[in-house]
Length: 238
Image (cartoon, rainbow, N blue to C red):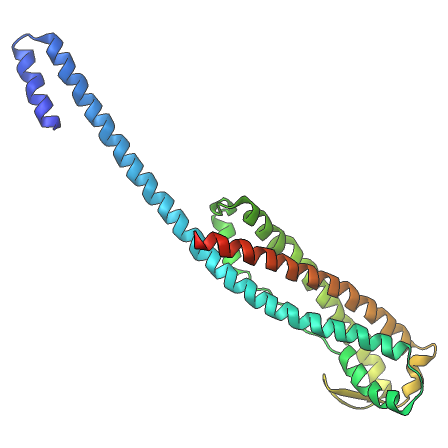
């Protein structure tokens, strides 16, 4: 088409038809501009498609990572709930044969921990490319809040329980423990040690507070994942 206009333009110029020459020259310019615009549109479309494909791939991986995180957090939630419940039972323990027998199982609920290691590789990859790759603004904000803030609080809270286990409980248990099976039962030499002022009772109270604080963080993280999963499901269906 451009060659066609060029031939006509050259012919009109040789025939001194300057007005027609300008018309055909202008037409040639318009065709060039249209061609450039079409090429740019195609290029932009390709780039947008690449960005969308990358976004969907990362979000699908994040969705899977969040499901694994939630599975771990739910397990921790059960452990923390059991620990708080058993702590209360021990602190309010009444001397009955049934309670004394149950004490070993309640202690097993308390003197244990579970690590939380969130899977963040997909989010970090997305973040390195720019969170603006996520087209949904609400999703973008929730992802940042969960990965850059909330999981750090959970890790710290869960870590506090492990720290207490290693630095508070183990020294005490070495002195009073008779027999144990980790996460199953713990038998102590004096079942009444938790019913009177003692280091063991103080640690039990402190540990219960750690569990309660950790439980709040865990529940908050699970709720955040629930919100993220709902938005991710809608986003990935588009």
